[in-house]
Image (cartoon, rainbow, N blue to C red; front, top):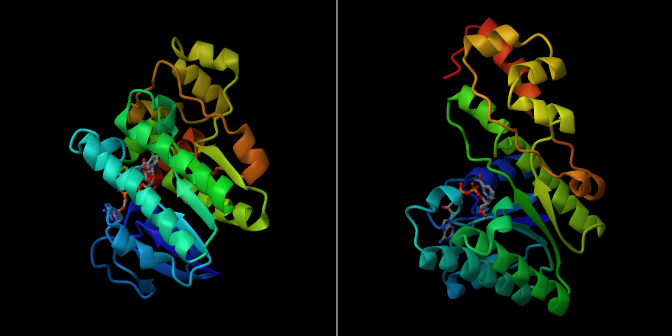
Length: 278
Ligand SMILES: NC(=O)c1ccc[n+]([C@@H]2O[C@H](COP(=O)([O-])OP(=O)(O)OC[C@H]3O[C@@H](n4cnc5c(N)ncnc54)[C@H](O)[C@@H]3O)[C@@H](O)[C@H]2O)c1
């Protein structure tokens, strides 16, 4: 299958290109010149004339470019609108022109704050634009709403701490996107949105106990890591954020591999091997 990945130079786009490269023919796109062995089509998503040719000859599109959470302070409402909303409209027009009616569109869990947040609002509009193309032009579109998968650099402790907050491992988001492509192709998904986060097995009682005894709750779930938690002075939130993954697992077959438990196991390995964690 020939898959167009927009925002191919970004965090998700580049990881996805790696994941799909063996099984598919890829067309990569971004707005800077990029070195790649795949076919490359440069385009500024905000400019319709540049975007229209992108989907030519493709079977499937994964659309990723957006200003997101970390750009909130630097980018204006106009910036957010032009890339996130106009960019989405433009790629949908390109898809229509070239009869490419299967797509994965990357939304965000920030859509929950759509009423007052400029980022969440653009994701809300974007999902509705996708809905219009589904209803009027018969597109099949899977929309993913990931938690924060921003790369955590070399600070592995911060990565782990964020898994108890708003973080999700980028590798799980990439795997979910691959599953979403399959679900659209199989016809399991016609037009739907799915939360993508980490999976933590906390019971309501454990969540309630977290505020007063976080280490006790963690040690109960993942025994044997008490010393390493102390050694690296791991900070716990008052209450871990829990994702609602029921539908994502049932419909998409999403099975996340990384959570706070996998972080502790990896931390212990790194520590034993004398590898730096910060
Ligand atoms: N990063 C996160 O934690 C996170 C969380 C939830 C949702 N998302 C969503 O996931 C998607 C991908 O996020 P990411 O972290 O990979 O983003 P990123 O910032 O790493 O990459 C975005 C890519 O889009 C490209 N781009 C920017 N402006 C462009 C333009 N005018 N024309 C063409 N390309 C342009 C950039 O060059 C970059 O390669 C976004 O839609 C984002 O809203 C991200």
